[in-house]
Length: 90
Image 1 (cartoon, rainbow, N blue to C red):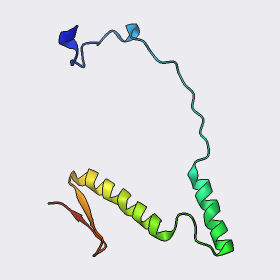
Image 2: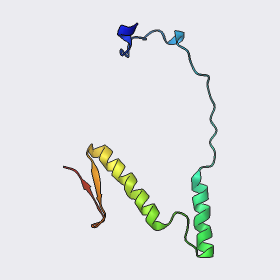
Image 3: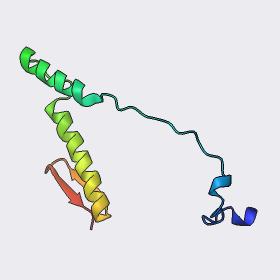
Image 4: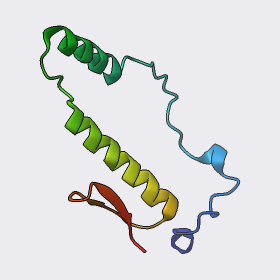
């Protein structure tokens, strides 16, 4: 048994003998988008800053774009705050 510890094919054909988790049913519930939209419209009515202001939203978008570019290019990506631009490592 110890010889097959790291062999991913060692249990082929034994699926029906393995212990299984009970099936779970997950329900879709409201997520944060509704709260953000509600807060946005409320900030328009009251002329107050929304919880997620423009600077925060921009920073979040940049981080997401950096992750996607890094994944696709398979290289590290850096943010140059002085130039407000991305730099992909060569």
